[in-house]
Image (tube, rainbow, N blue to C red; front, side, top):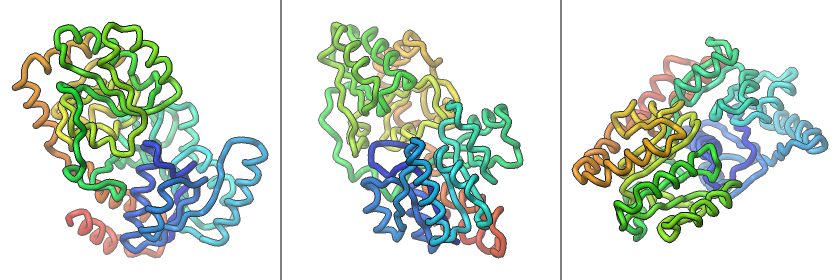
Length: 369
């Protein structure tokens, strides 16, 4: 099968959408498909080339002149690559692929990662719409996407071609007990609530430190907030890290305090690293934490209940160890091979002239390996 992925870029900056697309492209090429990624480029071009994935330059910046250029370049790419499937991971790509399909015979698939964005409804222009969680699928139905177009392929990045095996990473020498998050520095990620919750418990646990791993436009706001607390020397802004696993392996409690979150990919990596987890009970996060079996769920935008959860875990070492153990259970379903197989099954619904039963058996065999 000839598969073209459309993303805005392939930069190594911690963008979950890009990471999932790169993983998928690599595994598809590894399993014999002809795969290309069209984007403005980035560090992952080297990895893609190593897996035999062709990278095609396509700048999808949303300025009138550039969009005209992008339309021309996209049509040129389609003529040369002749895909069976175009898989768009972001809104601009869906619009290009749908509006410029013309007489081309490809089928269009989109993946909805951030359904809370207003533009996410445009992902419904595709022939099939992949939702990364049941919560996202439900939200898209409420926004008018027909159920017969929707397929749920839960996210998963474990055993990613972008990563080493988890135990091959060297843990960092963090101050313990360590509380950490790995997230974009955006207000919607609940960073204010996390800092506030940490301040509430800091006096009770004078050895505890908070590590905030990630970058984003709201970071100066959070740094100013932390600086005005009596424990600013115990709140560490670490910036973007290409290997956040080194933090997770040294973390006692991992927190994702998001106000909204389609899935929470980082939680699967925190689980694999053996962190006790506290996260918001919102959108796709409960699915990622086995509905509370693999981590503590707290109401979003509530620093008081978040502080209580942290207090309980730090006060009771046996409870902390129990939740660290529970986090590591039932992780197989977050593998990239499962995502690959289920995504290919969506493609085969659309592409004619393939022996579907034989191919599905092959994909199942690959997952079982």
